[in-house]
Image 1 (cartoon, rainbow, N blue to C red):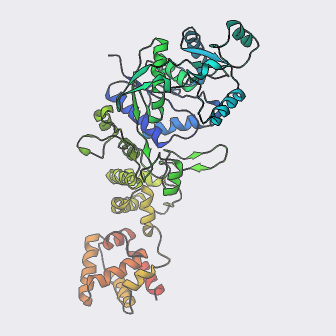
Image 2 (cartoon, one colour; image 1 turned 90 degrees about the vertical axis):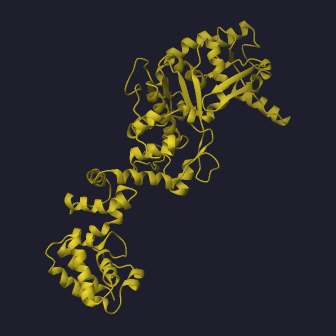
Image 3 (tube, rainbow, N blue to C red; image 1 turned 180 degrees about the horizontal axis):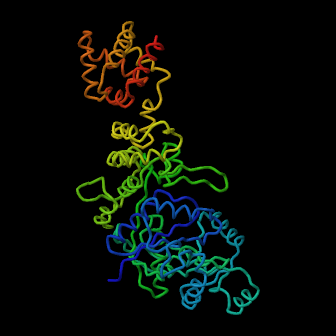
Length: 504
């Protein structure tokens, strides 16, 4: 068996969607599981929809995900170039070849002429298709004489090249994920292979590139299933061995109906792209997972399980573990519903598994927070306390802001619950007690609070709740002795006194 070679072939017509990331990931996992190569090819023949910066975005996104190609426009390789726009000469060579067969013909119909025929069909309640029935009444090299065709070419009349679909053949198709199906060629139309600007369409360029690059397996989205019959026949027309095909199901909306879209992300508050993307025309920014604080390994783990189940229903897997276990035959046929809460769960699990020092590095990269007055020693203590509660590194700051800034107001519900006429005096007395605590460590502080409550004849709640309120401004956060220790004696006493003076 030849070496496994797969390719991910996106078009630079916008940011990489979650579904595209999953296709690239499955390509990568399958290739590496089989000891093969993963190729990134940019299919940029659709010049009308080309978006500036999209190619660079795709490459950066894959790199962030850890999906590193063996061959690409950036990495090079023996099958270069890896941009379709740079492969025109290769396509021209194969076009000349297929035109010598009975599988292709020239079509000179103008857009206006086809529109007229389309209207005529609609008036009769039919849908027009350029196929085995209609091609015999249209303006093409099948109906025109050789001399007429030559004259049109000499006059440089624009034309397209169409595939001549065989009549009434049953094609038996195979898919690794979906099994065997069949299609009658009479249900397929004569697709354009080369546009009137001389550029090949996806169908023709794709087949040529896959053959030239020795691709053994084509893993792509289910939207290409209707094209599988045409692609089978193109391989037949060219006299080439076909690769194996695997078509991935859709990633579905959170409610389960329909393909996940950017609109769903906007509606439910989650990204559908790996990185932020700024539209070069409108300047609008679409949110990305990296910029929202997701960790790349958590993101990739989440994406991998949108349509594939590892053995023993394991959920947390490194990229290396996924490579070892990945099997295309175990990819689900049914669509996978996206779940925002599950995506956040993955990030929480990966964040809490990181060392405090690793999380500190992440925290320092978060935009819009001020850590200049906090040394690493203090930050590491805060991280140790808050990491288990956080979904993102930024949560450690937002949920633990009281470690960095003294409260300037106090939650009204908390005040009603924790504060009464005697509380101010109790808190003042406790502040005085703190002066005499020599070792400002959680165990000593816990004992000091216990002894104080016992001496005053108070339940622990009568001390702990108002004390937490004075330090935090709310009734939330980790254990009070831990908060006291991180704030330090002086800051803790200042906060207690401030609360006594400001809570009424």
